[in-house]
View 1 (spheres, rainbow, N blue to C red):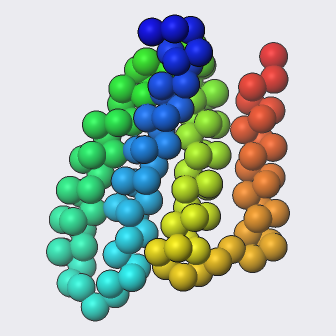
View 2 (cartoon, helix red, strand yellow; view 1 turned 45 degrees about the vertical axis):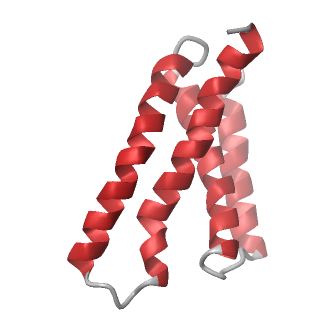
Length: 115
């Protein structure tokens, strides 16, 4: 793989894995009448696919990024995916204070990349 693709592949995998994880963690909120054991089983089933992407993302990404950098990236990606999910799937758009709080987390992740 060319140099840029090797660095971008873990990020793409993190993005895809976070889509699965967001559905596993929050998708059931749209179906509050579903029994909790069913929701837990469905969430675990969805999370399996998240792990199929997250583990290689971290393994391959560790060749280029430190563990704290991978975690910082993952947090920012999670927030971006969640923002879209909350608005689109849950019909709960983020308010200014949510964006401000998420922005502070982005600044924290940026600091992790400072040398």
